[in-house]
Every structure is written in C-alpha cells, then in structure tokens.
Length: 346
Image (cartoon, rainbow, N blue to C red):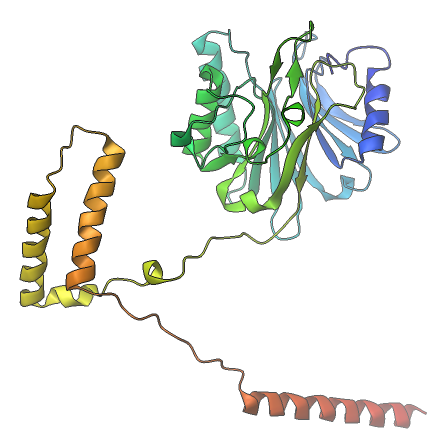
C-alpha cells in the first residue's frame, strides 16, 4: 500500500488478504511509529517502524491458521525485520526488506546491505533463509549472472540496485526466485508509476540455492485492491526435502588417482599433459572463463586417457529374502500374542 498510516487502510488490506488466503504477508511502507505486535480477528501483525517519524516501516501479517508456527520476531530497523517460522523439514527465517531507491547515494545503499548482511548472518545456519520485499532493483536477463538469476525477468539489463542485489545473492549462495518462472509480462510487473506509463519489476524473493526447489511459483496479482502503486506479489512455497541435483553417467565416476603413485604412470601423465598444453597454448590475459574451460578440458582429457575412471561402488540390498521371512514371522507372532491377550481379557 502507499501507507498503512491512513484511516481504514489496515482493514482494507486484511479484507483483500482474506480473498487471496495468504498465510504470511510481508509489508513495506507501513509508516507507523515504534515496533510491536497487533492482534486482529483472523490475523496478527508484526511491525518494525521508525520510533519517532512516520516513515518507512516493515512487517509481517500472519494468518490465524499459521500463527502457532511463528517462533520469533525481530524488529531490526525501519527497513528490515525478520520472522522465524517452524516448517516440516526445516525452519524458515523470513527477512522483510525495503531497499533504498535507485537515485539514493552509494553510502545509504552500502549501509542498507551491511545491515542486511548482518541480519542474514544472525539467522540460524540450518534455517531456510528467504529475503522478500521491495528491493527497488531491476534484475536483467544477463546470461553471465545465471544461475543466481533466471531468464524470465521483466527487464533486459540490471540497474545499479539490481547489480548490488545479485552480488549479495552470490555472496550468500542465494537465488532470485522471482525471475525463475515464465509468466506474461503483466504478471511480472510489481510497480506502476502514477501516470501508468512506467512498469517495473522491483519486488523480489530470494531463497537459499539449496532450497530453491521449495518455491513452486512467484507471480503478481493485479486484482488486489489495496490502494497502492505496487501489486500483490504471491509466491507459493512448499516445505520439501532439499532437491540436491545428482549426476549420473561417466561424469559421476571418479578418476583412479591411485595410479599416480606409480612413477611410470606419473611420468606418462606429465608428458601427455605438457603435449596438450603445447598444442593448445593458454593466454591468461584472455577471458577468464574461456581460459578456465580450456584448462579444465585439457586436464580432464589427459586424466581420461592415462588414469581412467573408477567403477562406482555397488551396494547389495541388505533387506533380502531371509529378512523378509523373519519380518513376516515376527508379525504373525505379535498378532498371535494380541489374540491371546484379548481372549484373556474377555
């Protein structure tokens, strides 16, 4: 909303949240004073605002059905607050933020990201960390910045705030999940100028790369009537076990480095490696990524030829036919004992 510091603004917002059935909603530009918790009929509001002035302010609105999962709330600054929620497999640390706009000076932006970095580090290490809110950042579609960003951003190039956000996400091994999902442009826009001519995607959601599979979708809903120049951005998050990507095939097999203990193999490896380097000289002043890929391919090809790869260890299934027969026998024994006990009680 433009601000919750208006008569009837909170009531209007809660009525819209009833329609969209949101469990946890992150708020920016609350513009109340101080910090605290407000109980309403079906919602609980946690907020962190300036102590004296009606400016900035962040917070969360938690529905009644989710309130019992809230473990902690911390009001950090008028621009940052956190809430910790218990999950099925992991707990979630949600960080609500309101970043400085693009035209602000570098010192103010640097101070904000220092505070955000500190807040992130204070979250429990095992928690799933999610940063969401008004980042005032345009994220582009630069291929060099993937997989930190997706290829479905509304914008082509990142602005200064976007670059800062990408750098922060990279330093924390996070992914900007709001750019991962293919939607129509009208479902990517999060902010529209008062004259209706400028449309930007500046509200985002970041999540730890390890748990990015928890995010099912992120899109905006333009139908929410909340008297704001921002649209309602709703992600769908489902608690799941980490979906670590597994590699199969020859790449998953390790090189047999034990062969390097043999002097003859070591000598052959060095000789062939030098021959490959002479055929494909490496210019270290060229593009660093191309240099690394060339060097990597040379080392891999040499190791494939001289060292070979080890066969993957196969483990026998411990639950064999004998275990199955014992389990069945035990089950029938327990059932027989239960019948005897029931008959004795009668």
